[in-house]
Image 1 (spheres, helix red, strand yellow):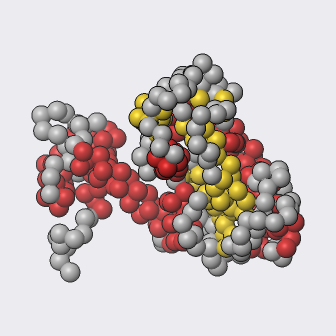
Image 2: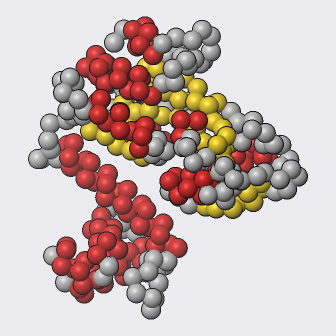
Image 3: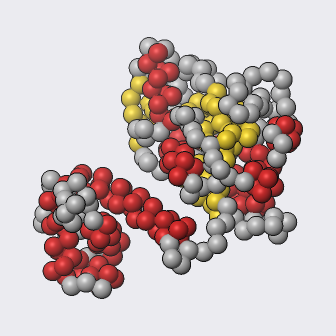
Length: 313
């Protein structure tokens, strides 16, 4: 296959574009990468050609076009995967430590005790963490770059589920926000996220008119908008902060979302047992409905530890 095949984007082009954004100029990117400025310009031009349009807006400094924004997101992901591959399987790869995947919607107050307990001296092995979107964690679990992960609403996740429960979702608003009966509902959202999908689906099914009052990719920004009274948003109940409150009535009920702790296929369940028990203790609701091995989450409530014991790990 030819080096310049139009179906292949060389990783050095992606690294160049990321360096330009991170340093703020072609000159500084050249210095950071040990290249000449003409080489940097040539990389950008070549990537423009492969993608069929400009990455940077002309005459506006270092400003990404819409195409460039999309390219940047993928470039960072691909460079991250390249770094992971070298770290786990490269010539100078370090000894493999268990990697725990956690969803990025968990608040820092939820994460602190998880980090502290899983990194405590009582655990025999060192662990690493990765916080990301559920679909990316599911992919990482499938690829083996994550050993165990807490997943919510994962579509056909690979791996073994060792504990499973239902996460309740609720509508939240700011303390001073008043929902006007019959008026369109102001929604705080970000397209593609689970809360946004659930909100739109339930509002449309209920025949409730709505409009996007605030939009941001960052969860902290969306929570701040809700607390400030911009509108309403569905969240997992454990995400609620003291600056917001549950909407008591006037909106369609929200579903409970299947959630659980998964281990990658081929993972050493017995070796991971201490981590799995800690994760389940920290993440599982205190009176949840549990299942195992993808069985329906119904029936008599069980403790998290009993589920792990039934799994014989």
